[in-house]
Length: 187
Image (cartoon, rainbow, N blue to C red; front, side):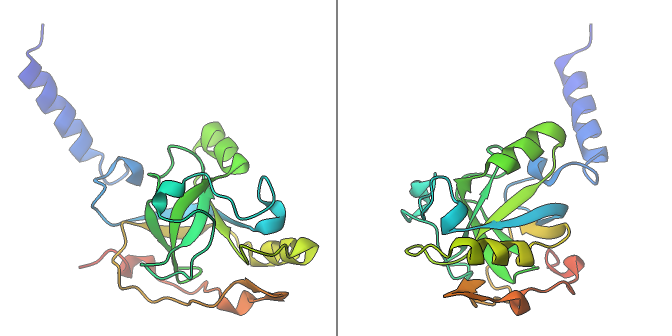
């Protein structure tokens, strides 16, 4: 029979030796980390369930989806339960916006449960008006190949507060694919 000290030491050694490949979800909640190959999609008033600006997690400080993208006013994002902490703030370099986990996403749940695919569904548009098919088309135009996100980001990263969908305008020029993730978690 092994002693509990020996088992604890072995477990600690195993965890520390695999920390470079461990999921960022397992890292300290205070440690900045980059998650790569995140499925990034968008949703808004017309394709929210039910249609409108309602969110699942009102304990984050607001009653409906929104935000400008600053650290103090992050944009709502939806994801799978267990993928992020409720109200967790992340940074999306592709958008130059801070996002806060405030809503649920059925496709995100499926992706996470089936194969552990990270999925962030970002709110776009008005919380009071339905952009209809035009807004859904904009969501499709904004949807990129897999992107990176930053967990536990610094609160002073560059931000673009341009609305991604605004009164019929789809602001695809407010997306950024030329970013270097190695700079976000360096001291």
